[in-house]
Length: 360
Image (tube, rainbow, N blue to C red; front, side, top):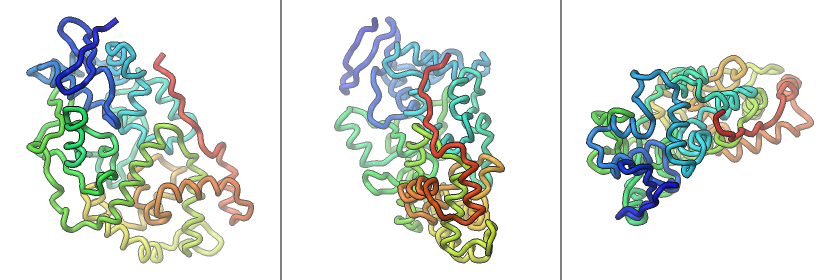
């Protein structure tokens, strides 16, 4: 067994050998990248690439191993103290944010075959389309959380709830999140940062944002990430849930499932504008409300970046709870417009749980 030590900051450590020490446990809501950053700091490595090699093996480029194999190696080196590779993926990365609407058994198939997934698994394996939204999501931190973390754990760390795409405010303290400066290089083999004031900057447009709209969107984005770690929704029923909400708003043409584009623009565009001041949603201004609404009811055609759905759910339902309640009520509804009833009947199941088995 490993030798357990206590760091000056109160962090339990596991001595894997005479030269390597890894944090033994996760801090609350901690990301995988953050734990790697703590290891880098505790190991006193001067080169980030040495930390990567210790935790995951040879840096990519020298060996073509998949992300899954590297993660399995990491879990094995931690002797299971940090969970299985699937536990780590679902509880300590933003990957679940991309799983909640993956069709059929594809989500479980992805998890079961992680050892064969390329390094850029988060987009390629899900065939995600950006649809006008970028996929760059800089690390974010809350100053109040950082101070509390130092007091409780001796070190500030990256919180998963701050990292999901579309989260712009700290849901605990209600303040805008600071972001890693654009000139700071982040990534395996480049640096293993922990949050500190000198690498962070406040959003440049923080005086021009709608805080209320940002809070609603942040709650929904975080809820999507949390839900995605446990289960997935049926795309057909989800589409019908959207359509019924649009029907009740008078946004569908008579006796059809086609959107009245002018009315959608009139009702939805102001809300899109209220989010446009946030960097995560700045693309809303050129994507447009009509395109967002159309995308939400076209899920059967193509899997898309889930950040599309955050402003749509925020506007059409007001909260994630209201949206999911409407989703499950859709399965029980006895009187629906005929086209919607057909969609609901096409859904194989209302909600499919994710398996949390380890890698084979």
